[in-house]
Amino acid sequence: MTSPSRFPLGLLCALSAFFMWGALPLYWKLLQAQAPMEIFYHRTLWSMVFLSIILLVGKPFDALKQLILSPRAMINALVSTVLIGGNWLLYIWAVTSDHVIETSLGYYLSPLVSILLGTVFLQEKLRKAQWIAVGFATFGVALLTAQLGAVPWIALSLATTFSLYGFLKKFLSLDAGIRLWFETLALTIGLVIYGWLTPEAVHTTAFWGYVPHVQLLLIGAGLVTAMPMWCYGYASRALPLSTLGFLQYLAPTMQLLLGIFIFHESFTRSHFFAFMSIWLAIALFVGDSLRSWKRSRL
Image (cartoon, rainbow, N blue to C red; front, side):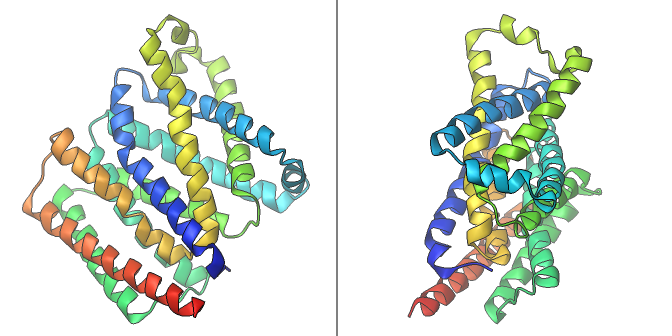
């Protein structure tokens, strides 16, 4: 259950997270010469460093104790770790392999999956305007899918893993930063073991021979990962899943535009109509959600 008093900050956090995610392909393209697994390794490792510094300042020992002593919380967080880890790795590979538009399709699909999960399992009700928005969004996504001319496995995998990740957060009342820290810790432990067993896969020793700007970019991968994840963690608890689902369209829209205008991927008439349809859906849904929130404050 979400609180109306948390809605404004939750909305701000969600918008911040999705804007940062939307711009992320620009960052990964700077590291296109590196192997996806190597980028994933450093993304996780340095995220762990930044999150640990932030958490130590806040002294969150009670929340850590709550997580460690709860088997249900641990299982939930570990499953979430697997989902977000797979999502990160696939996304890095797709962007650096020139599949930016298909990644945008995946995150266009993700809100629809979130809405499905929210209505089926959390009994979240959609109003008439919101159902109309769903129809426009579904139409837009269908056009993008048809444009690909094949089963969009990258898009479907990204949508499923990210939506399930957000869904699981609804069942655990735990500080967003603590949860993200634990998920990153679990990923780091797994990747350190993997890197020790197969150092050639993550180029663990090669890092020290890279030119400084590449080293800084790999370290910065942790920062550009931790910031939006932190914002999203708070937003996922402060907003209804259906509202959060539609705000997710901001990131893939930015990715789509980057794919077309910056990376010069194909942009057809289908893309144009899909883009307009999805943005109309966003306007309808967010406008209706804001009106509902204002009424609840009266």
